[in-house]
Length: 120
Image (cartoon, rainbow, N blue to C red):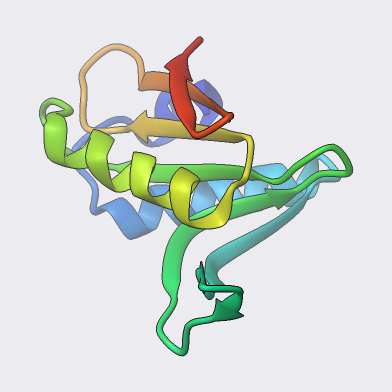
C-alpha cells in the first residue's frame, strides 16, 4: 500500500489508487477482486441489495476487505462504513487505507470476531 502511495503521491481520485492497489496485489499473486459485491444475510436469506467493497482479497482463512480513501483525514464516517462491511460480511479483517495524506499512506487495520471489532 505504501508502494502505491510512494509512486503516485497524494491528490489523485480514490479510484486511481484502488486500481493501482488492485494491480499491485494481483501482480504479487493475491486473488484480489475490485468492487466486490456481497449480499448480506438477513433471517437466513441473502438480501437482493448488496455491499460493494473497493477490494476483497480472497484468503483461505477468511477474506480481507480493503477500503480505499483519498481524503485529508479519516473520520468516523469512514470507520463506520468499514465496520458495516465487516459486520455485513462476517469477514475477519478489514484494512482502511487513506492515500490522501502527505508523506505516507494512512493505514488502519481491524479484526472482527464474536461480533466485536478491534483495531490491530
